[in-house]
Image (cartoon, rainbow, N blue to C red):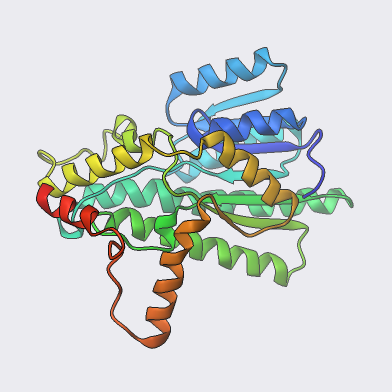
Length: 298
């Protein structure tokens, strides 16, 4: 996708973090915006900020776990702008702790947002974009799904999150191959950020009432929260940087978007272990102090 001027971008998780920066960047390129988020006050604030800057914005409260709300988002985009060109399936939540300590509600919440949210976005928006392409011979489209380095690595005390983000990588690779097979004028990318200062370490603030946390957090869940909070808040790559990197990848039709290429050493080691049929290497082999600190917190 080379031309952004006058095109329409739909962004879930659009009120803060990566989503807000995607919206600001898209507006700077002349795009019309459809923003979705589950947090109404933050959504209203971001939409108002963009309108002051002259952006054309539609803001829709949307719980991406629910297919009917994602469909309503698509309907709003078509009703207001008549087409969709760029979709960011970006809404996501974080959760940590020893794998067996996660409750059914924990799994339902994380998989609902991180996996079902992307599934609904792909299932609903891809056919819509293909229809738009039929009406416009010069149509260009792109879908970006936000995963994580946890989608290509498996650090401890992040199992539920790891599973959800691995699913997003597999889903997006499959989407890429399917779009290529039918020669669709729609690209696909998977964004795999590492630790970037966003609000994901505060995901519990938007945990839905139908999936409450049961009892007090376990020691491992508190340890994971402390570890992630420290890592996220001390990150040197900003959400603005990630937005710039992502739009460059879209323009260059680049599939994998890694914010921290140095972390790919772990991916390479994991691949070598698979090919050699070795047991998984310790992800903290190079930083044993992190492993020991984590054990101490447990």
